[in-house]
Amino acid sequence: MTQELTAARAAAAATTAPASAVPAEAGSHALRHQALYPSEPAAISAEEGLMLYRDMTLGRRFEDKCAEMYYRGKMFGFVHLYNGQEAVCTGVIKAMKLQHDWFCSTYRDHVHALSCGVPAREVMSELFGKATGCSKGRGGSMHLFSKEHHLLGGYAFIGEGIPVALGAAFTSRYKRDALGQADSDAVTAAFFGDGTCNVGQFYECLNMASLWKLPILFVVENNRWAIGMDHNRATSDPEIWRKASAFGMAGEEVDGMDVLAVRGAAQRAIERARAGEGPTLLECLTYRFRGHSLADPDELRAAEEKEFWAKRDPIKQLAARLIADGLASQAELKDIEKEIDAVVADCVEFALAAPEPDSSELTKYIWAED
Image (tube, rainbow, N blue to C red; front, side, top):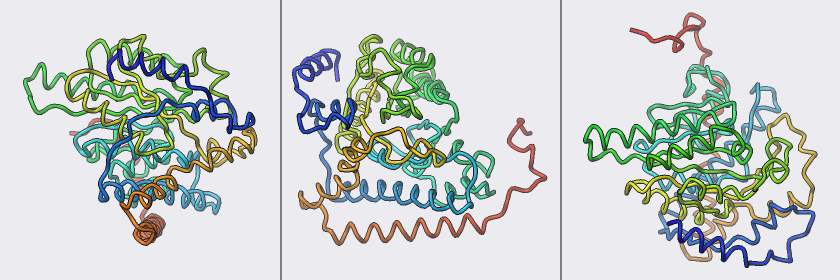
């Protein structure tokens, strides 16, 4: 999206009145979501639709199982689940080239890892601190990493992953421009939340990415709540996508509960990035269905707000669209759900039986080895 299109889109959005059906108790985030200027969704085949449904279902069922294991005392530490935000992860990552493009996550990283192709066994093993985990049991829930799958890590502190993602995007551009590797066209996606958009790394990296026209997508998963802080109380301009214009880059806001809307926006941004046209700031309006972490009783959010977003469950919306468009049957979707339930059950069984890291390797992976 060019700056001209961004400006035109903003003008059109400004004249769109919020839907009156949204109850005031649902909050300003719901009003903004309801008043979104219509975006161009991705066109998909039946095969792509089933792939998207499978990926989102895996993310949801995996997280539900994590909650069960945590409350049964099988999983320890901080565990931040992704329920409700699956359309963002699936919409962006599944529009990219796996094991070619690069990805940086946050402390809410399980589903990002699964979408990148990290096997469910390795992700669950890591959450159990087992040697078979993708980080060899040393990282746990917030520090998933897989070189093989180009996952550059989950990060416990907000904003930490953005400079890492910037480095990956710089590497792609440097290989092409300085080293003459014409096939170096990898794009990087950096995921982070609305709360991160008030820290220095965000602004510094947007500036550098735009200055050098780096192939990177800055993906804001705006779920309104930074732990218990309302986004509208924490930032002077809650419409994060508008900040792109200050850096001369493309910016777009999109329905983060609609996987096809996210996929369409991601495809446009990826095309620009591969063509050497620079970065995109993509703000996805979404909502987490659970508390900030499994230790959060989630008493701050209004019941009406939760009800508004529950009716916009991204997985149910995709299922309804696939059936309505004749791209899938109810039986096919049920078969996928059964398949995913078997995968999740298997990964738990595998993780519980897996060995603990050997104490003799306590200092391994800390220093460089010959």
